[in-house]
Image (cartoon, rainbow, N blue to C red; front, side):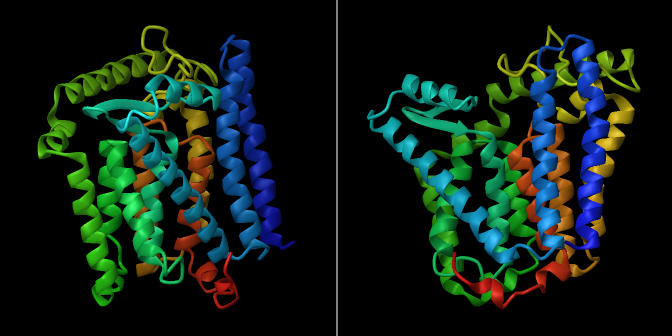
Length: 351
């Protein structure tokens, strides 16, 4: 165990101890969901800490870890598209699907975007744009299967029907500094273009894409966010420094009845729950990742994506979960030049 690993472990335990103050505050304020939200924050920090701990101690090989993450997300996207196809063919009912999700204790976002064509979005969908970034950025990860994986990822991203995820995917592709990979490999470039075109054809007329940005549902969704912002700011001013504790929510403004403490504008929700002091603690922990980022042209890409990921907390409640921890771990792994050069040859072992 290296000194760096010990520092990471010590920092993690200290932050968990500090954040437990707002868990206790939530219990004192009789917030029903105080423990549930605290668990979500802890899980996020645990995943980040484990990734940093083992990487710093050279206990895991970076490329193998990234391959496993890519494979896991690919399997999720396959299952998601398979479900959409089954529903379209009337081989699976919507009620059964919701029942399965309830059994898994998760709440998907669903919408019929075309007759019998269902939008399915879960928290795991936010991982897909970063997987696209990995495949375009690294030449030694699932090389033989890259085109097929990209096709599935783009189709899954399209059917998530989420503006934030679409824009993040666009940024991941456009800002990618390794564009030479696509320029030199015409097969991958052509396959990527065909995948995007085929996905658009599957979705249907262009009006459904346009409606995602300008339709009536979007206006209603944006209005709800405006109401959340006004309500959360007003509620935050009542206890600006320490907040109302984990699990706090505004009874008149609830996004999800199963998890009422979650809001699209998650940063403001956290401000209301943990106050300025608690938010500062969380930001310090998240910014610790930059200690491991090297200021180079290659790492700048992942630093930019890291910031974009944090900014998504103003539009979707994605920042506290195991998936969030994985996203942070990906950014930290791929932005650090020392880890990029660590055991590269040995890491080419297939998993």
